[in-house]
Image 1 (cartoon, rainbow, N blue to C red):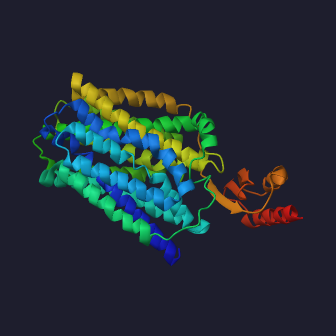
Image 2: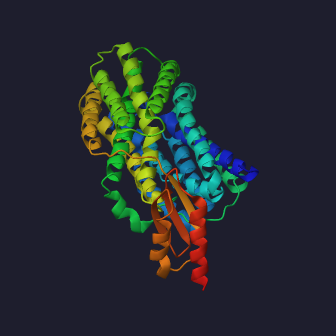
Image 3: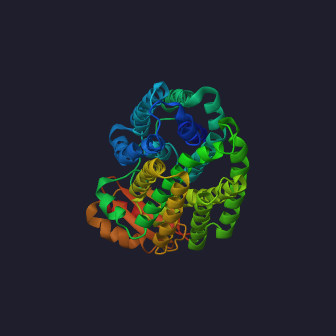
Length: 452
């Protein structure tokens, strides 16, 4: 990577860390810290934990499309402003109801798609995977760090402190976007951002809908867990600032489990390992529903949960990328992200409602039942091989698209082709034996023929 790409990757990764750190820090503490509010109820806690997911789900695709029209940086800065405003409202809230307003406003700053598109714009095709990998590692790091330090910050400064820090982080991201990340030339975005005309077809795709529902259930389960788990730990006389002593070894062991599962897959995502991960999560919720205040049962269950969760969270996006048609990855990932955040909202509401009328153990049991239903959905999922996506450019008219498509299909390794004469984009899904030089030669020949 050159100096500009390194600068962009590090700056965008830092934006993700600061933004996601604030969101994640709330999850392991809100259920306990919220008991200090005068209008406390399990239902309102559930809405506060998952509320941001509702606006994230609703605005993820529109904000991505807006960045195509208005530019990446203006939309990202707008999203950070909205996110910061929501954080400060939540920090100053003296009731749970007002905190929920702040959380919903936080979610309205739905800029994940625009950030990824900006990363694409400022990196060369050959270096793009490295830039995305740096950002992906940053997101994972922010989750683990937040789970460890969130309880300690909450114990010292309360929820108001977490939300205030989150707002300050969001404001601190703005100079990074404005002055540190270089301005990029907006490239063809079919593989980066959602396109309105593709939504209906991809939502009902026989394989993609299974992954969309899967990530919805996955995030429903982690939200449900974090509405209940902090309260469960308090029953063991663990104060908030000591919760990290449980989370640290649990996360460390689950990462070892993740590495072992990834190794068993040998660089792919076998269906049997996906099923195994879901079974781990099913076992976790079943154990939690029957733990009878046994600390070691809870610890074992949480290890099972995070081992399965980490594997699925890391591998589902790669599966969506592999399955999505060439030139339509942006739309597929936008739909996927919307389902993901909607799952967080459902998990918060479901957990709050169940706890309001029954018990935490009932909520855990419902999680186990949901995981069993999830296994039936995954039964129809097909094995997918890893593919690489390429974007090439040329000058060709719509009249010669069929001939160009036919010629590119003869190139070894080409699996799928999508052409866009409007901006001269050629989207390819290719396998290991792809001959790039031959594809470029064909594209240049048709571009010259187009001129003639």
